Image 1 (tube, helix red, strand yellow):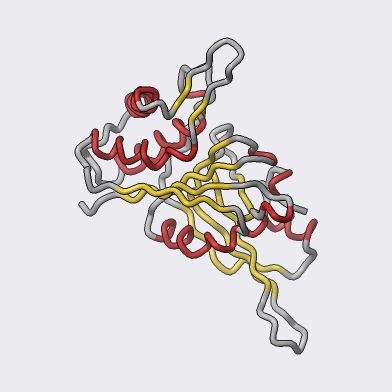
Image 2 (spheres, one colour):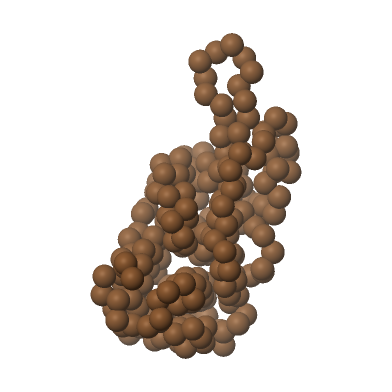
Amino acid sequence: MHQSKEMIECPSSWLSKHLGVGFEETKSHLLSGYPMLQMSHFPAYDQHCSLTALASVFLYYARNGYEQLPDNREYLFLRIRSTARLRLIHIPRLLFIRGGTIPFLLDRLARSIWKHYGYPRGRARNHLFWQSGRRSVPFVLDDLDNGHPLLLSLSSGYYKKHTVTVIGYKIYERVNEDNTDEENETRVFLRINDHWTTRPRYVELMSLDPFYGGPFFEFCRIIPPPI
């Protein structure tokens, strides 16, 4: 049942398949003009999904009022990669070592990039979750409503050991027609750029629950300073 084991391109189809009929979309939001960067855009032979995700976030901010950030995906990626390697946050591929970025340090890396480009008040913070994705609903939706993308790192499932960028959401509700005090059932789908394709893909937020077979997961919030 858990989305962590499958790829979602159509939330309504996923709901019908796993939870039955009756769900209706009640709200949606998508960051306008978000740069859908792909890992294939960059010349790297190691795991660099997190670096690509960070490059897309900072390129988005460069095009939305933060003029000290370079409006060039290659410059941003190389700067992020060099900073990550200097600080031992990213390990390059070597022989049988696949390499990759340490997700627990993504917030530190993001803050370093803010400072490098002259924005010392730029913020970043990791949120680690061992329990249900319901706990993350308030700040995730609030950040997106305020124009702030997030990074999501997953430990298992379809996006095992992978970082995606959250760029929007869709909310579905099913009305409780029984004469009970139970609330309507709500499901939140996060629109993501998985950095493998530009096609719309989603993560079902409520299913991120390690106790029931979902992955351990982490959000990295990247909040720009006031202009």
